[in-house]
Amino acid sequence: MQKLKALGKVRSCCSQSLRPLSHQRPFSAQPNYAQDDTLQNQVLVEGRATSRTAILNKPSSLNALDTTMAARLKRLYESWEENPDIGFVLMKGSGKAFCSGGDVVSLYHLLNEGNVDECKMFFETLYKFVYLQGTYLKPHVAILNGITMGAGAGISFPGMFRLVTNKTVFSHPETQMGFHPDAGASFYLSRLPGYLGEYLALTGDKLNGEEMIACRLATHYTLNERLSLIEERLSKLITDDPSAIETSLAQYGDIVYPDKRSILSKIDTIDRCFGHDSVEEIIDALEKEASVNYDEWCKMVLKKMREASPLSLKVTLKSIREGRFQSLAQCLVREYRTSLTGISRDVSNDFCEGVRARLVDKDFAPKWEPSSLKDVSQDMVDCHFSPLPEVESELELPTALREPYM
Image 1 (cartoon, one colour):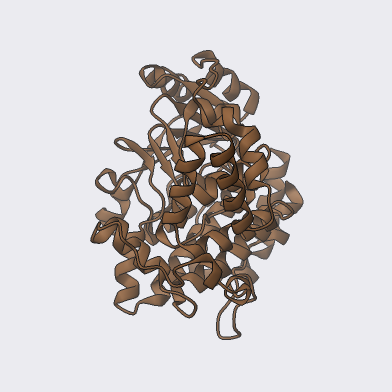
Image 2: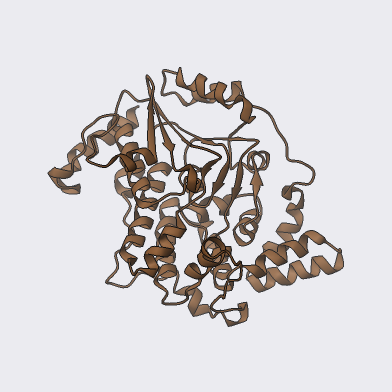
């Protein structure tokens, strides 16, 4: 609580210089927004004695995030962090998904209509919320029951507790859509055991709840049938003590181990193949494994990588490798540059083409530009990591305000 009080004092002193007086937020559990019912219903709020729960509520789109949802989450979380009566915060999703990631179909249509600025606003708002999560001063519980993909991981993984179930499915399928794993993915994927992060990022392969526990992407596991018991237990807590929350999560939790057929049983092969410096070398190593050991799994992995955007594969590998030596804030700033370059079409139209092929027309026959790895130049990759042009603003995160208290 001392950290929280200190942050509140600093914010109070700096509020005049940080934002106009007309935009100051009241200290309350639920800010009084002048917004329509549709927006309010996309992120519902449950209030308890000393906790608040944010519920992603667009089940028809698997709770895919758009700008208004990310903005509402950010405002709610800022208000809850500043409210001394709130001890901890939870997040969950409606329906069969926690969150399927960003609403890329909406972004696709915006880009085709020429609304590039609205797309930029989405990434800026989303990444700022991810950073808020990564520096949040109160205990946070993300209930990842169901599909958890892309940015859905980004808005939940930085928090303190991540509860998964036997219904949880996690993946980063961005390279199949001509994009890159973002929203902090280069930070947490790069910190997985060995080269598992590179494997997941380049192939889009899935992990279940047991596997997420094993590689420490999740902190607790429970059967879906017992999830209501945990939620009821948490709703009765009057605390801001992480150990009390951890005890409640563990009370109805299960100790689980990955199945023998789990991808984690292939970790030695993954390290041998995905530890190489280039995508071409990774593919060569997989081909060698497939031929020498008659490994059908390697053939399946090769098929997935050959279906992905060649440019996205190279950009993604570089992103994961750089993320291993960067903070969350540095990863988000770099990913913002990469995302804006990706949607600009200055280098390639792969993002729109990938979304079209997989989610719009659903012909699953994207025409990548370039169409092969050998045609992807180093300059094409490097420009995704270069500082933005002077006419563009870099992603600005309040590191000086928040990180001294971490």
